[in-house]
Length: 137
Image 1 (tube, rainbow, N blue to C red):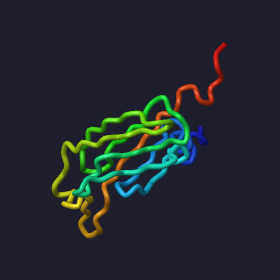
Image 2: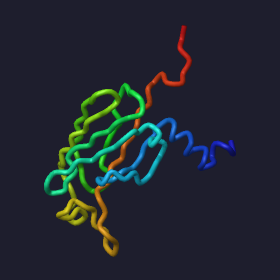
Image 3: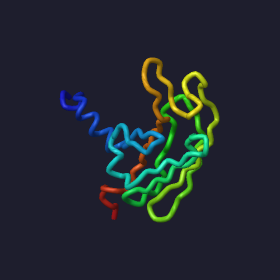
Image 4: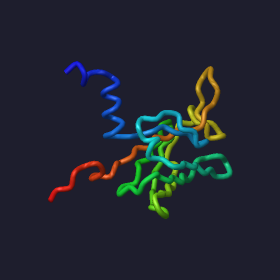
């Protein structure tokens, strides 16, 4: 019982069950929650105003389900995903709502007393259901 309450044990299980990462609109991976090992490359494309509008994602292995991409800031997007070639995925981002007090004209988050930062996103990988499991006969 003592082992399963350790934060390191819980983090290790979460990284295998729900691997995720946080990245920003400049393609920087800010936090790895177990998903970095799945990602080959990640490219965020902006429109002329600097607003994120597309994400091109290449995985290290073919996945049956697309990784889930959601906004991690005060901007709400509708995200449409299509399978690309090989192990890649294409995400179209449609901005639905944002907080004018938190997102500035350059599409960066504003923090009182701190520097502005690029918008952030969360990517959650859905591992293939049968990977690592024995096959039934």
